[in-house]
Length: 260
Image (cartoon, rainbow, N blue to C red):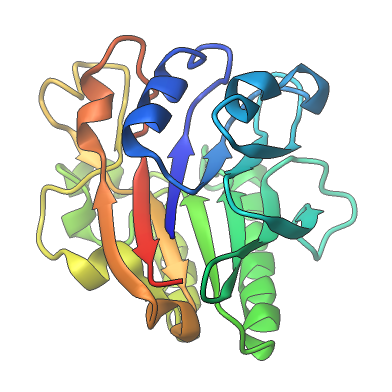
């Protein structure tokens, strides 16, 4: 089972680039972030024609998440529990039925949090606390699950080309990193770091200041796997080359393969 995560930064802007990558990479399941589209306007046919079922949790002009799946989906839910007043479309989850086992797939777009300190950063930390609570609830079920998407978290200095540039940014503040560590310390596995160590591995390059050409990247798109799911992990890779194509997102896909 190949599961990918991709912050596409607008489905309309990526309506050519995304299908091209899908045809090449051929993932079974994809969680998308920042579709920036209401559900009714999402171009479902483009993906249904490729054999994917489409589930969206959209929002006009910003945010928005989706799941594309060639495998059967069950129990699709939208919205991260814990705050009934939060109307941001940032969370979608569903159970994917594999050949050997079912996996609960959670797609997320964690708040950016800038400027920090301030209300946006308070919202980010509160959202991460809700994410922690959801992870605990899922772990209690003792069934395989993963949480994948744009976390807007630089976990460690090695995850940035220029760590000093992010010291005062919401993505790299100590409180942000501590909240991410608390998630991992529940018993979750950072899939990429379970397979690859060292510097130079990024998933995001800003459009500004020639960041891509200078490889001024950061790793902020992550797969966190519970112990049952981590036992199924066979590979995790970043499709860096996608960033160099025409009309790219500022993120690139990251994917795992599971023996499921």
